[in-house]
Image (cartoon, rainbow, N blue to C red):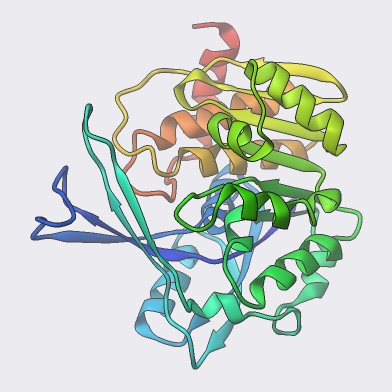
Amino acid sequence: MTELVTFGETSLRVSPVGDERLETAGEMRIRVSGTESNVAVAATAMGADATWLSKLPDSPLGRRVERALHEHGVDTEIAWADEGRQGLQFAEQAPEPREGRLLQDRYHAAAASVTPGELPMDRVQRADATFVAGSTLSLSGDIVETAEAVLRAAGSGLVAMDLDFQPGLWSVEEARETLDGVFDAVDILIANEEQARRVFDRTGSPREIAHAIASTREFETVVITRSERGALACRGSVIHEQDGVEVDAVDPAGQHEAFAGAFLERVLSGASADDALAYGVAGATLARTIPGAMTTVTREEIDSLVEDLQSGR
């Protein structure tokens, strides 16, 4: 079984029930959500052995994060903090033409103070793949250097990064400056189309954007996700594409991470780029039909949808 190690900060996601506004909602729902932990959950659902590394406050809120990951079959290595708080996100869904909102409240999160010495770096060195998201490097504190240490500690395994640019956490200029310092350690870069355009300041078609990023940054693989329009990957100057599937979306929050987890599991299993894309798109499609950012889809459900995608139905 392949092992994927992910490192990053995970928040509690607070959302009004239904389509209520944050300022008027009388009831709130709390779920766990973090890019790296969501990817670990998706990879585990595909059959990978995934471990999430981080630092959490030694409090009921921090323990809730740990419990949620264990319930999804993800192993954890956590440094428990006496100081610092649990990061929060306040998310509002909205039917068109209203736009959803995501408010970040991660200032002084315990994870921001994590140092390399608090993490089992030997597990990173032994892992088949290591995954970190750009949003983790947006937090101030020791976590930035620790994230870089994790990326560079990976032995012979793959190093994957999700661009994960979240405007509520930092500016485009700040993201470019910080990420430029770690891109040389990354083998696989995953980004949604809009984020790739903004951070890399690129125009043109998704194919042109992926090829330009791959050639100028020397990534082995660049993956561009396009929500219900599918995804594409540039590997070795060859573009691979997979069309998407339109569904009645219940909650799009976790679709990108579901794609990344399924895609990485297939890559680690030796699958072709086309096969990995099909599984990523299938995982993302099913994730859009489920509330919450952590996917609960099964490998059997993904296999079935991949059969439909690859047969052209």
